Length: 173
Figure 1 (cartoon, rainbow, N blue to C red):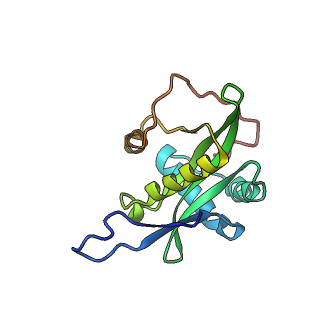
Figure 2 (cartoon, rainbow, N blue to C red):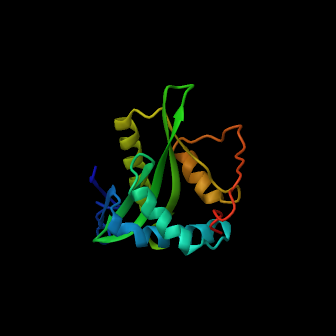
Figure 3 (cartoon, rainbow, N blue to C red):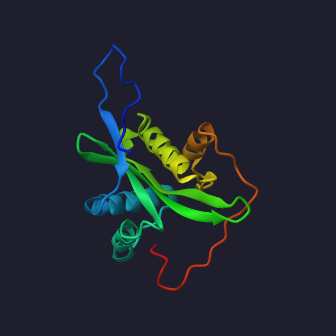
């Protein structure tokens, strides 16, 4: 799983070599950074301030319950620079699980350098090993940059609309 991937532009003879990006499963010691990334992502993409009283325990809750999902983190020189969370949805129609990509975040300085691609490649390897029937994600309508990246990776817009009903005290924003 912990296969390093050289960042975009690595190996070119002009300029300094880009450091390797290591993608690995998150561990409990990563919880504070993951919570920080989640808060930054929510603020950047939706203008929402997440409740830290729910956010950090929510991250830790997933890390303690692998049957719910897992986080993958991108690390460079010992520093976390990106993440995604994967949760599972059983499809009775396909007799298999979908992997849902959520909480995708890459530090601004590490965008367009192969960081998300390394994370996504790792998710695809995990999905194949798990015999998942597919990958799903949702993206804010106004986030054209992310939609473009996802389309480039083979994702298509579905005819479904997402609806939700949040229980009192669980909004987090």
